[in-house]
Length: 527
Image 1 (cartoon, rainbow, N blue to C red):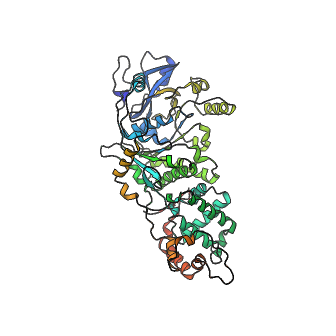
Image 2: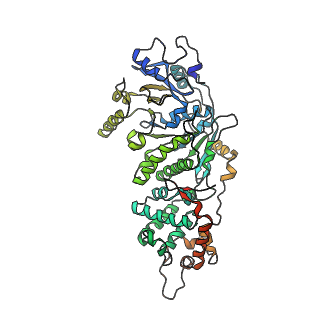
């Protein structure tokens, strides 16, 4: 039960928003947040520069799967808002996923530290603050940084997401799709980068070219671009992100022994200079969840709430196919009980088709120093319902930890726009010590499952074994032109052999039919 429902005061009755001392306009706004069912408490209403603690601003728990947006300029308190919402979801038994790009979210696992600012904020909004840590797991992409390694196989990651990571153009993206199509139908599972490199090399060889002839073929130039992109990607130390054991996104759905939802924190400081990579991996996690979860319709509470931080990176330079797939995934995943919150600086960072599906909004302050800032401010104001506030003035005057809120009511209708002084998180507002973080990772029951990478036999190894188990390095590059009397290279021997074609046919019969592709091109595979 929320503090606003349990905390007695001298003037506030049981239902928020009915206190007679409230101004008429504020009373009308507050009545829109007087929900009967379970809800998360965001804070207290601001009206005419005054905080009104008897008018609590809340989000109905069942509406958290209707998606949302947390926006605002740098330094306005977006991260603390994520922490506040994540804490209350965990307390209600809802698992949460957070991407920790700057490294300051790990504190959610430790009790907060009381100080004058926390005490002042708590008094302002009538919050019964108590230092509390929440159950958390920490992950790291490919094991780079502090966290349990998160990996994906190339097969499951799919051509659309991989094209964005490799920064391929539309033609190259389509060609990569043909390569995946061939590997799928022939049962050539692509676990890591060397598997993909081997198949690309084969399809540009004399023996392999006819394989794609009837569906457009693969030009040598395009194959060369793909191979060079793979080589550059690997040279930057990012090959570890692809491989096995592949992360099972069902592990994001767990609750602790006390019934609280586990907060899964993906630690990204070590790869924050690779935005295309980590933003695309976040999308893979979301799409993989969509594959596996059953339809649940409108549930009493979400099965998971997924916070997509730095969301503008996901949409930057994205192809139309990529954007269409994001839109469709966000539209459909709601019925599977997953809520998605995009976190970014301004609503214009999110495509309009996606923005239209976000029912809950927490908008922190915006800056208006330049003409572009002014334009963004006006565009943001237009995305809100009609309001009793002067939103242009309000959005530039909000303080840190204050925001403009509108959510969906229990009936699914938008609530009145409410300027809000937000509550203080009860967990630590900052990172925990690296040693404590590493200790938490090692103590996790998932550590033993994912810590050690496994390089099992897959497409590359099987091809290599068919010609005498040559070294892996010999298959990293496209085949070179041989001198007239020189022996064929290992790659030329392997991909041109009858054994290769026999292997591809037999594997295709055994497992090729098990792989189907999602709306995002990721693999839907029986586990």
